[in-house]
Length: 314
Ligand code: FAQ
Image 1 (cartoon, protein in one colour):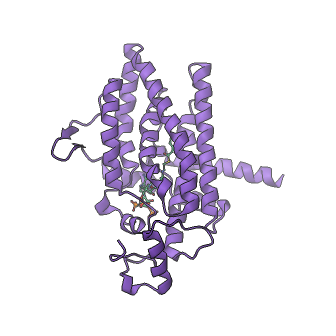
Image 2 (tube, rainbow, N blue to C red; image 1 turned 45 degrees about the vertical axis):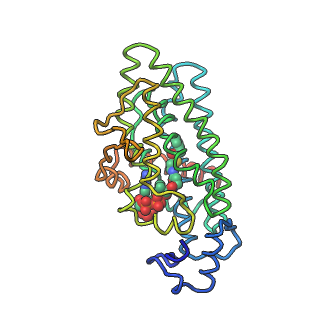
């Protein structure tokens, strides 16, 4: 990896010869598997990439409370309500760990919130889709937390120490979230025909957005090569998407639901499932602000921010 080298200016991949002595020493530490800590020297591009990724991740956890939070008052039993409350609170906690990790890079939580609200920072595309039935609570746990785990377990080994350490706890909690979603869907699948139909309809809606969570295909991902070279990302978007599909197919069989992709087949030669790509035009529209719930999510976030400001100055 050291020989191909690495962008540290945000403008392109650098060869080892083009690097400064500091950049070469930094890359050698990454290649040796050392963790980078807040007070260590780091290229400006590394710092900016981490602020972008950790900040986006933190915003996703915070905005990610909204789709499921929508169902807390309508949970069907006291037990389901307690489970859902605990899960949504966990997501708030994940956001806070992540904001703290980003703050070690010299950006404040207030600045990141400003950037979210004025559109300079993103949050995960998945949270711009509505939750239309209680089955969506189960499907989000199963598919969305399932995708989040696939993406985040490798991030426990990310090169930036504070981010990796935050991820360890987050992943433990996400595993509980995924299991509670699967268990909820399993309970509904053992219920009435109407409940089974609700689960299938929910899976049909969330399958494609869940595949989009891993980001654009590698050929179309401007950040992957650099982030892999810096050890920020440990796997590419396409590799993680494949892992998710392979993991999810047998779980769908156990549940008795059909994943809505006629192109989904086991490929003996590759040792993986072939599957149809999601609609990347839709993905670009959603991250560009035109998803079904973008305006609603940001308005909610804005209201919460203003309320907090008022309370802080009262
Ligand atoms: N949504 O070059 P790449 C969760 C943007 S947490 C929106 O491939 P990168 C827990 C990307 O930022 C879910 N934007 O980018 C939960 C970049 O934009 P920019 C969040 C996306 O960073 C469960 C541009 O597209 N998880 O679910 C998305 O190398 C249930 C080009 O893309 C994380 O954030 C997207 N899906 O790879 C909570 C994990 N994909 O800024 C509640 C950490 C890409 O250059 C309920 N993040 N973009 O204009 C990562 O692993 C990476 O940042 C990726 C994207 C893989 C998401």
